[in-house]
Image (cartoon, rainbow, N blue to C red; front, side):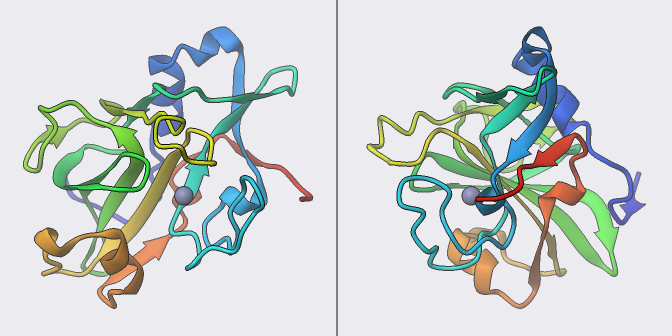
Length: 199
Ligand SMILES: [Zn+2]
């Protein structure tokens, strides 16, 4: 069924909790440093250097338990999809792979695409594969192996794609600068989030 807009919220957070058994850790909500959020101009790790371009999505790295304590997500955490859809592209990124999934969700003729970055995927996951909402598509990559100063995290982006965007050309460069791709704040898709103040 085709739906319009993203008023319907994703079960991403529930699926993430279930697949990673975070309910045992009394999960309360994902939590974010302001620099982990969409449009942030600075990195949130190490020296908090300026980013080359505004952050294209959100970085999911931490959650609060019901006592209000903050926990970090370990490398290897399972990553679910936000909505039913089809894998259209997989590219390497500096920490792992980025998986692009298109959905039957439209707004003004533009189609919703979600992107899951810095993950490790199984060989079976390739362009053309259909996924259900909440299906596991990979695991958060181990950043230590890449000698990166950033802790393991899932980068999640969401965007509206105009008709005719070429799947073969999709990359982090094209989605940031292409006129017919409009990045949006992925927090709109995911309830159950808390933003830490300060810093
Ligand atoms: Zn990011």
